[in-house]
Amino acid sequence: MKLDIGRVFHQKWLKYFGVGFIIIFALIGFFLTSAFFAIKLHVTDDPGAVDYNDRYFQEIKDKYGKSDFIDSTKVNTREAIFFHHVLVLNKYYPDNSIYILNAYLKSHNLAEAERMFSAVNLHMQENKSYISELQEFENRNLMDGTQRNTGSVFGWMNIAEWADFKIAVAKDKPLIDSVANLTNVEPRLIVAVLVGEQIRLFNSDREAYKRWIGPLKVLSVESIFSLGVTGIKVATAQTIERNLKDKNSVFYLGKRYENLLDFQTNTYDVERFKRLTDFKNHFYSYLYAALNIKQIKVQWERAGFPIADRPEILATLYNVGFEVSVPKANPVVGGSTVMIRQKPYSFGAIAFEYYYSGELYDLFPFKRVKFDWKNG
Image 1 (cartoon, rainbow, N blue to C red):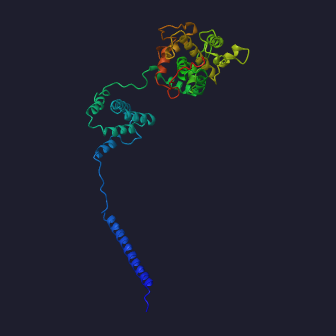
Image 2: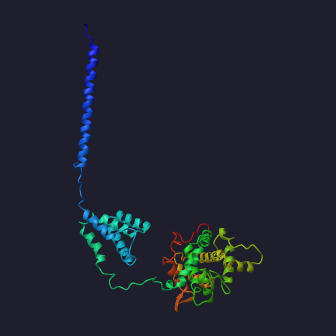
């Protein structure tokens, strides 16, 4: 019989393949079974490495607790300590101090900001001078036995009428911003003279305050000796109007401003009165006030005595009138005396204190440039 070599080779190949296939599956089964029992018996558990700072992390958690709650009775002290820490860290690692401060200013989450410091302090434990400076503030006992006062250091801002005023002026923000865009006068400066004029009218003893200013939270519109919410006198309004047109005036602002107060009728007195005493729309009150401030600023600047950064002087001159605006090296703060809870304040001082108080800052912040002198 003749041997079929090809057939024999094919049979052996199938035999070897079958045996190998069985062995592979047996091995897979063995490993899977072993893995199963290893897991069940916790043979494969990785005990992991406990960070050597684990206790420190636990202390952070215990110290600050939840990030969404801060005891209001302690927040002022904690915040003072936080800002002190920012200053200290800035001496050693300015970048990190800026990151932490920026995060807090944006989030207003003091607990999280404190945790950020704890993360930094983890790497600063060996820096004795740093640790000493951090602890110095807390060990001074500045908070113990020290009289804390509620409210503002500016006494007249603690009256209930001031809270009403802030609500009222917030309603006029669109108008004030619109005037600021037209005149290039900082909105906060416009409000500074408004405050001086309104705060004397926001008096709980006045009948007008009791009847509508307080209940409705609206600004007081004057209509007798002075006009509007910013207290513009008729003579002052007429001077502002003339200054816009008179190219030879030291108060002249430039061509772009010439037509801002143009009248629509021939009865100027009537139209002016209606403009300034409109109870529903105070736009012209703010416009006249802004132009008044800017004309005074320009006069002093041309004379070589710039006062653009002196809100208290601008407010004083706004209050006393163009006739008293005489540029000089050392102008004085003053103006009308305003009595608030039996305490006297000058018009200029009230404007100054408001301007730098931080009150209403979200609505009327400082601008990089208080006046834009382009094109006049």
